[in-house]
Image (cartoon, rainbow, N blue to C red; front, side):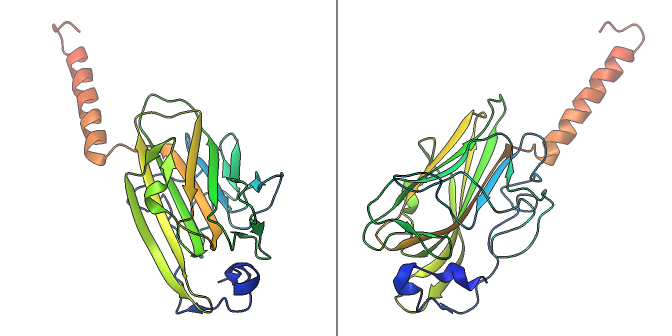
Length: 241
């Protein structure tokens, strides 16, 4: 683990040891139960942040994803390309401008006095078929307001804790959480909103994956069989098409 990412502001910089091992926890859509696609494939969108920067004031705005689609937060690789974003922008993480919020030396976003709130914008494309969106977030210290995480105003269909490691010093935990939505159709902009449940949450990393929902194998086979029968019917002599 990159120990600089254990910095929870000035206080936890002195005592930010993890009690016990931290497992690589972020999931690859190519192998995850919620996935079934490879980052970079047609119709997919991806962006990931691990070291946050500030492109604007007031507040903190980061428009430069830095986690390659070929890597996973916590370690490991994927079949994705070596790029930090897939698809058209915008790709943007915005902190709401809560007083006292700052970037730690390790590139986390932290506030020791107030609960922070974030918006993540990912550019998309209008489509007629269903689309799946997966948000994976790593926090340290205080935790997220999990029920309050939304995508375009909708609560997640599933919320899964992927990993948890206790922090030394001032306490709290390093937590990796997965949120998944399935939308009836693709849209031009995916806007994710989430907030800390209380002060002293350090936003460590996040990734967003968007892709058309893959058809289950039985549905694919059924579609092929129907198409084959239609072709036989058209070719049968004396049978009008």
